[in-house]
Image (tube, rainbow, N blue to C red):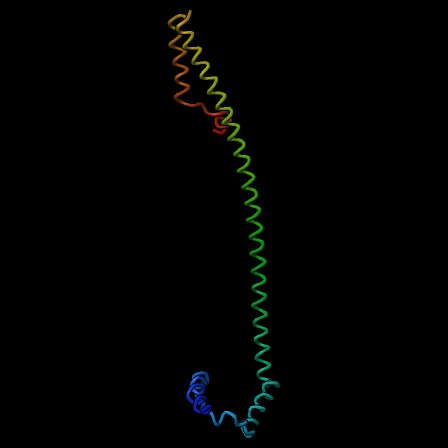
Length: 163
């Protein structure tokens, strides 16, 4: 009964795991018989342990080509590292320039706000003076100057000097 179970259940599983082998329950327990095939495998193992000159020279050539490839890759890596360092330096310079320009813009915005405040004061005083004791001829002239300066902004000294 145990042999039948082995033949029906276990042998098919072993056949699937070991394709091409003739597995049967009765032959599984038999020990392998030493013969010419066992001697051949020993010879093959011995030949793999002592490689021929041809195999050694082939391996030496592969080592040389691999060494040359490694050298090329090392050179490329060093070139790429220098490029990265240059780009980092450029990025630092650009960050510094951006910071400086941001400060300049802040200063210009403050100056612009001050000028706008002064302009409003001048406009208010011009409107106040025209309704006051100034002659009627002077008031339109003052208003005209104030409105002209609002319509066309003046260029800063730096921009005027660059022309």
